[in-house]
Amino acid sequence: MTAFTALFLRDLRLVLRRPGDVVVVLAFFVVATTLFPLGIGPEQNLLARIAGGVLWAAALFAALLSLERLFASDYEDGALDLLLLAPGALELAALAKCAAHWIVTGLPLALLAPLLGVTFGLDGKSLAAVALTLLVGTPTLSLIGGLAAALTLGARRSGALLALLALPLCVPTLIFGTGAIEAVATGEGFTVHIAILAALALMALATLPWAMAAALRQAGE
Amino acid sequence: MATLHFLANPARFRRFAQRVLPALSIATALAVAVGLYWALVIAPPDYQQGETVRIMFIHVPAATVAMGGYVLLAVLGASLLVWRHPLAALMARATAPVGATFTAVGLITGSLWGRPMWGTYWVWDARLTSFLLLFFLFLGHIALSRAYDDPDRGDRAASILALVGAINVPVIKFSVDWWNTLHQPASIMRLGGPTIDPTILYPLLWMMLTFALLFVLLVLLRTDTEIDRRRLEAAEMAA
Amino acid sequence: MSNYAVFIWSAYGATALALGGLVLLSLLARRQVRRELSARGLERPREQRAGTAR
Image 1 (tube, rainbow over the protein chains, first blue to last red):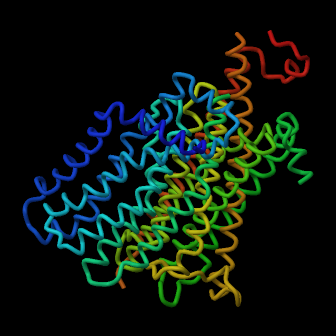
Image 2: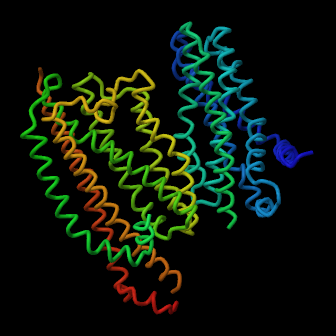
């Protein structure tokens, strides 16, 4: 078992030991999304047009909710110091954490969103687009959120600061995610948007673990 | 490079700043005076845009300096993380608010130019969106660097942020080439030379120089203050 | 063509306000920090070179 797998499984176990944390995030997603049809009214055309944006924005906020604790508990109980001293690459440890975060946040959100999309009156193709764009886009959100979490470890008002740092960096992903859903609705292909989402994810994967490791190192000093 | 190392010593920087600031202030004031007169009085109205072209004389320089300011922030961040230049952190703290202000000026003047030109105050195209992101990146840098009791921690965290966000600058620059945007394509920095008439190009270039001088003046001034502030904090901690 | 003067003056005015305000605030902050330093008798950097912490 590689160090990455070991860390990944450890983080997964830690999170799943308190399933309430995961459920809260998903529940927030459901509630926040449901507010829109309630607030805007049942006009189907309008709801169908805003569905992509609402689902994506709510997914973004839901993903942010759980990020503050991503590194914080390790930071507080000293496990982070052990990680810094460990021989393995810190970059892989950070990546393992983000992967675990995605499994319990991004992945469920991507699977849950189409169900909520039904309440917005989206058709089958659009629902598939919602699921696919979130599936490809949420890993990027986990990585960006992980960076913001590492940068704000131990800061004052870390929650608000985390959101301030993460949200602007997440905007390109949001734009192409919702753009893809819109493209499907108007009948054009969404392959370009998905390709760009994938490219953003790969770029994040290629750069952010190193940025996270740098941030974790100076947090531990 | 040698100049950078020379200035990396805070004490030397202070002496340099003390000598340069008075002359720089006068030069900047003169440049502003000349620039304003040139932009508002001498320059002719544009064939297509009429008088509103005068907004371009502040919008383009502000946006250019804002982007250059972010590049400086990223370079300072790298200097701090890689070479541990003692002055880099202080200059970064000084620069971020200046960059944020120039970005805000770019956003506001762009909006006021857009309304008469294209009928809208704002549009979510690639260039405007990425330029707005630049504003948020500056704000994030300001907030992050001041979020820690230990200022070094804040400086280094902000440096990482500055480097990660640097990708946004080429996106802003090339967005008008990559996407069909409402914003007009490049007319100055392009292969084949500028496409603007000289009577408009020259005041524009002068205003770019003016804004650059103003930027340098503000950064030097504020870095000087940050050096003092760090000494004050050190004294308070030792007390 | 309608009168676009209001846009032009608003743009120049907002810029003057923003940049002028920044210059002003920067000068005021500088003065305030220096005042606090001299209140502690530390306006001259000799203390640092002498190496005496406290």
